[in-house]
Amino acid sequence: MHKKIALVTNALDYVGPPAVKALVEGGFKVVAQDPAFQDSNKQEAYKADHPGTDPSGLQDPQKLIQHVWENNEAVDVIVSNDTYPAIHVPIEEADVEDLKATIENVLVYPFKLMQEAIPRLKKQGRGNVILITSCRTELPLPGGAIPDIARAGANALVKSLSLDLAPFGIPVNAIAPNYLYSEAYFPKAKFIDDPVGREFIRGVVPAGRLGEPEEIGELVSYLANMKGSFHTGTIIKFAGGWPAAPQRPI
Image 1: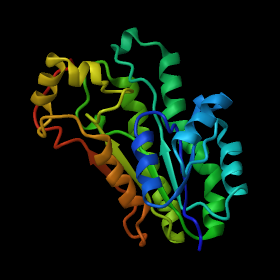
Image 2 (image 1 turned 90 degrees about the vertical axis):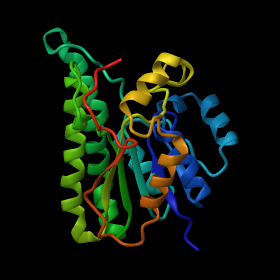
Image 3 (image 1 turned 135 degrees about the vertical axis):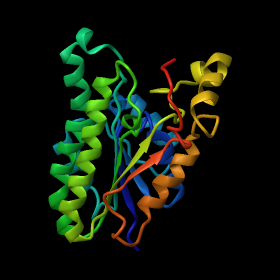
């Protein structure tokens, strides 16, 4: 029987940990890519602590995709978990290099990854693609132009990819979080442990709390295990009902 194979990028950050956990629990072998795994000691430690994973430190999209397909008959799921610090600054004070770096990490990288993966997906005739983006653009905040530009582009990429791959029966969807607990964007010390942070979250998120990693893991698992391909091109908001009212940044 074919062992289901998944690729998850940036496995230690953002939606990486719950995605890996949910997929392993669902019977997938997970190629867990992360720049930290360029350190062989960290790679071996992760593999020992996470049975069912094949950690990789490969950063170049071409080499990563080549590695994944060379070591497996086929790849069933690609989770492009793209993350970069959200830089909030007035446009007139912004550094264009920060804009370039943000776009490179959350838009150009998944573009390159899919450029390499698409011919292989078409050849094997199946596969599910999930991009982790953001729904932050539904209610932009002052000074948020840099991350908003990049995330809007990533959501547009999902639409384009879904059009290109729909004729081949390969669905492409995005999970677009906001107010999800992660040390990358909503760290525990500031938004869970600190009463001021907790009150801010209660005031702006209708659910009254941050999203739990296990909850987004459920959504990753659902999309990864879809048997049909008609559900494609969607940007699935994961934000506890936000936005519901005007807000201001903390």
